[in-house]
Image 1 (cartoon, chains in turn cyan, blue):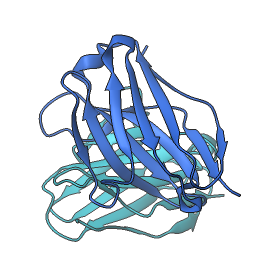
Image 2 (image 1 turned 45 degrees about the horizontal axis):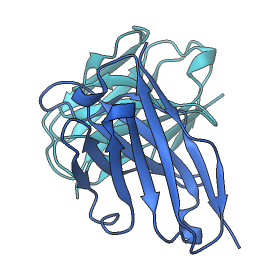
Image 3 (image 1 turned 180 degrees about the vertical axis):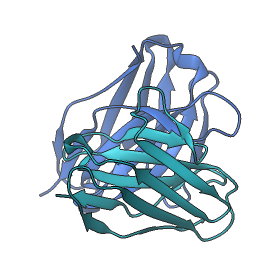
Length: 106
Length: 121
C-alpha cells in the first residue's frame, strides 16, 4: 500500500493567516492526489483533485500544488469557516489511501 | 443536485448481522462508482471498497475482503454495505461516496452524511 503522511498533524492559526499543509507519499503518485475538508460531525468535502484542480464551488483561497511524492494544500487567507481537519488521498494505485489528517484550530 | 442519503444510526450486539444503505439521486446512478469509507472514533479515513452500479464490479481493500460485502440494487439507486457477524471493532462512522467521473479520477466528489454503527454487548 502507498502510505500517505501529513504534516503537521495539527496547527493553530488566526483568521487571515496563510496556512500550508504538506502531504507526502511513500512512492511516486504522479498528480493523483485529492484534498478533503472535514468539519466535526460532518462528512468530508472534496476541495482539490489532480493535485491542483479546484473542485467546483470551492473558494479560490484554497490551492494545491505538487507532483510525485510531495504535495501542499494552501489556504491563502484563513476564514472562520476553514477551521476543520484536512485529509489528502492518493488515487494512483489501489488500495486508495488517505493521510492521517491535519487539524486546523484557532 | 447530487445527493447520497444513508440509512440511520445502528446499535448492534457482537455477532449480529447488519446491512446499511446509500441512496443516490440527482445523477445517473449506474454510471458512477460508489465507494465506502470507514472512520473509527477519533481517527482518520480508511477506504474499504468500491462498486460500479452498472455491472456490480466490486473491489475491496484486502483487509476488508471477506469481512464485509458491498452490493448494489440499481433499480432503486442504492448501494449497500453489510456484515454477517459484527465485532466491537466495527464500531465506526461509515460513509458512502461517489467516485468522480472520468479515467484516472479515483477520488470522491460527493459524500453521504454517514451512518454511525455502534457494536456493543
